Image (cartoon, rainbow, N blue to C red; front, side, top):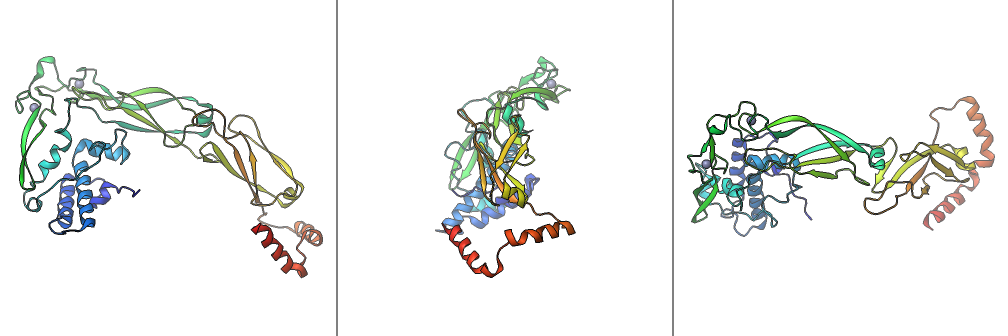
Length: 378
Ligand SMILES: [Zn+2]
Ligand SMILES: [Zn+2]
């Protein structure tokens, strides 16, 4: 599958691009790749659609926020529905001058919604955890400033209940009808009223604590049980703990675990991998090494006599718990030859004494190289 490009990259703008920057970038790219200018060019067609999709999302503040947080991997799936973005026809003329293309995009997310239900944004919280915490499936306390219903106005956003009135723009309907040109057609599009965000209500005097947003951020504590075998990037959802909004459903909070690197283990799912440096005598004679381990019991590595560098030892059942099901993965230990940084006189003379019995007989070097190759190929 082709990796989906980052929307900012598609439009060639910075992450903090203003609405004006986005519009300018979109206009120029859409003109460049427009099908009228590139007939029967499937590459241009693809780019035209890609630019439209990027602009549709980034020009919508809610969608942009969602995208900045989750990227293409939004928990609710594609904002365009299960089929993804389908592309729209934009008249080439509309890409010059005033900008007749905007209404096409502004109606894209608000208008098609089946229900009136407005919903707050989802919030992503990254939570670092250690490998040991994953192993013990620890219950951890996460504390963060999270959005909650305003305690002064009970989430209505109004100073007093009398301040909630019928929106005059949409006459309480919550929706307005707009006309947009889509190719040669004039299309009627119904979208949420921009003045009341589809609620049909207007607030005369806003609540001073939340400035009419209906929510305030408060330090909140959540107790979370780390799921069995949790891996880096795993997300847990807490319904209704995301952004609170006036007259709408609160978004969800996602807690994403980020497993901090272990001092010596690399992790491959349930398996752990590490390297053990050993001196030449330990390789030759064999040895037993003990290390503190994530399960609280020492990890005993039994190195047999005559071990070779780059060989691996497998210790079964001492890895991480399987994500689903019972049991634990394995620990793989890669043997490495430890060579001292400096040699003093005593070490040199010891090594020289070893040379006749352990060194490579220099007159047989060709034979030794040949045998090594044979072993390696078998
Ligand atoms: Zn309030
Ligand atoms: Zn309205």
